Image (cartoon, rainbow, N blue to C red):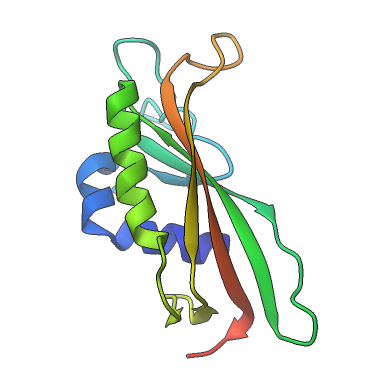
Length: 151
């Protein structure tokens, strides 16, 4: 489900326009943690004055639905940007991907049923040395997903 959600985000024009791509040509939508420095690419989490927009997606919960080949997945989503307003704008673009969307097949072939979102609000990444102090917006997405391909 995590990779299916990341693929949906990466395919969305509104999200693409904000996050751009890294040096390897990948959208700045990451599973679990921001990307660290990698070769010539400075990574996602940069210091003050050099913040770039990126999204981190994690699985918060994934209980099985009784008597159905479905997991009721809840994703944690953190949208980072250069300002509180820009982080909120990125969240709104991300939210549009999942908000009240009907049944569909993800690019991976997994079935996704009626996803929805919940905005939690603005925050700051912890200050160095454990973080960057970068503005971010937290939210969750309910992403009920099949455990096998439906394609």
